[in-house]
Length: 393
Ligand SMILES: [Zn+2]
Image (cartoon, rainbow, N blue to C red; front, side, top):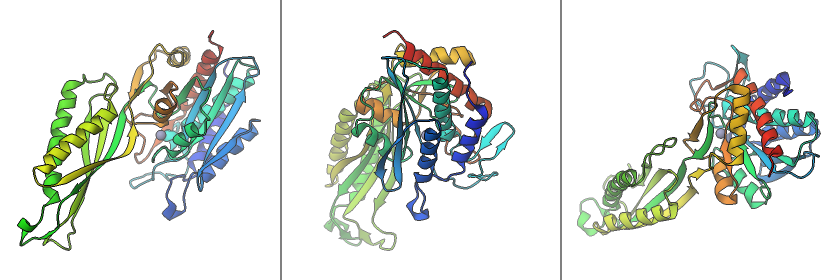
């Protein structure tokens, strides 16, 4: 009934996995060859992709497929072409694209070349059924694993204008993730006064400010966890200092003038990021000033928690499609931010994250996607698109 070309889907996913589309300028690697392959496949399906160069060697590929069946909604399928570095500890070739034991193995098999292949072949299957109302937009973006430059560029260029819903095809183990955790990346810069270690009283030690800042951040974390109920899909708020920089191991007798702390904050819906940054700034400044240190907080990246209501037509469409194709559906949440976070928070478009592959397999060695899971998701995409586009609006 759905006519997803299973052989073509698996072969295309294999081809994608064989391209090491890690963004690593030192190794001369980027998303370009993977984006080229996606564009080639789109053209083979008769679509006309546009290429938006986000940065050198880093193109977004976007195709709009008119249904030819009259007015209707616009549904976007979204995926990313970049993968994280392969790292060590593999027992298979990370870029071999090997199919064995019913699984496709390799970096990106789950996150998310499987999902990217599935959304293309699902849309082709949908179009092969005949005209449908509205249109499908397919977006294969760069840099999801970095600063999400691809998604930011997509919104900034207006490619999301008129889109009514976005299905992000990230691996979520079959869960229909209608909420995603927020993330804030902060840098605290603490400024004191340099001095000789023999005469510390001549200076003001920024490292004292670092200690005080880390202390008040731990208190703030406990406070936020008490203020906000644990989210059923997303858990709690976390404030994690991850990187410290100050002084030099070669100059142990020098009290440095400045120090920095990088902080990874994870939030849930209901936590306002502007308010939180204000709170962090005030608390850190106050704690540091006790040591004669000044503090500045810089927001490096801001990805709010996002939520799409379970009653939203987008979530309903995926829910009903999953029920029809694969059995009882479950709602879930995304532990990190995705391109959907950028699109929903910046363009105000509902998104849901739903795609083939285990939720926790991404970024690990021996990454894989089950072929049955890949095909199942492609079939659900066809049905979800059909339901979403034909809905009485
Ligand atoms: Zn991903």
